[in-house]
Length: 477
Image (cartoon, rainbow, N blue to C red; front, side, top):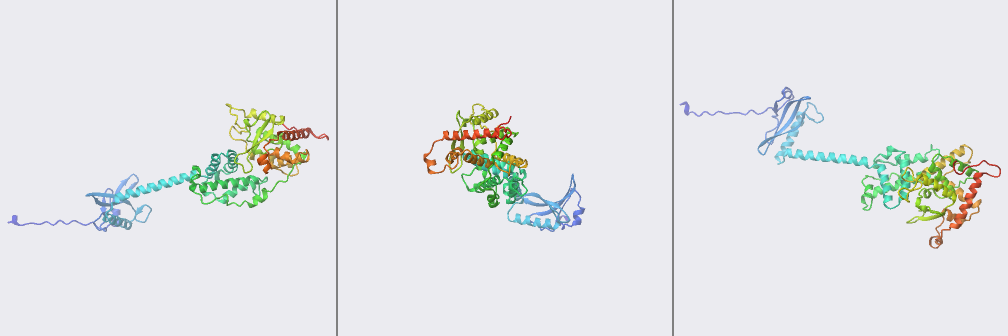
């Protein structure tokens, strides 16, 4: 009879209890507990303990079904109190509820996690690239980009001057600022750069150099600022992230009023004698020859003399290129080759000889590369001036431009050379209609006569006056 009795056994599944901090603390490594506080359905929250090399770790796990298979995902470590990169019990329940809502909406937490991981990786790569670009887009790189832009336009001579000024007065003088991202350079930084040349505590101020540096740097900032929208801008000028022109923001009015005034200093004959003696004693051969060449050539400009090439010298003449004025191409300035000048050229050929038949090589090449910087000569003249003042050989300091003015003054007042001849000899004031369009002569005879008279005057000056002055050699022994 018992066989006819249907016995039904009811199996009750025990629902998990809500987790507590006590239960979590009592959990043994290798075991896992589910949180009964999370409603079953689209996933459940569990905690597990595992033994690692660093000790026992309690870890939150979210579990759900994906395509009929149980899928688990770690959502963070457990902490009793709020801590970075950890979840407390309430925080873990909130995250589990969010993931349940995501699954109910048809989303896949695992796939979303991969998407989030890829986005973080892309953001990190973008940050690394930004930092790398910032380290490459320095003030030095921006200034070099401007030099390259000048070279690309065929303005090699100007580019050389600009490069020398940037190198001497920014790169070498301020390596910390030179290495900073250009976008971080402020007007205060650039004022500090200029103060080194014209500051109150600078004994010999180089105002004209400071004005040039500000002008060139302002042009470099302007190029970089517009490079992003200028299709013709050099590739290296873009990407600096500039928002303003730090060099142009430094006021130039006071410097210009102080240092751009027409010069009036003229050396006396005795001061010129001492100046020649100081030149002859200079330790740097190229600097000495450059300053002596300026004197022997009757006061030609430093920038033009320093760019002389072997090809610019013939048997009877030598040619300087005068870029001053609004010219697309420099104007050839032909001068007679006197023995005093030829002697200096011979010494220069020994120092920088023609190699492999390259007659375009510079006579004043410094260390086998570019020419000696004009700023080097200007600085040397100022050093000589200070030494002469201290030795009571000069009434007041003078600079490089004063030597050219002194020579023209002596050509006019002592040797009675006419204004027109001086203009042809010194290549200035040739802007009238007649000079520009009709008078294309080289005036070599008048230039030769004037240079001959000038060098004879120098010879008498170096030998000494009738009063028995000491001999002053024009060239070093």
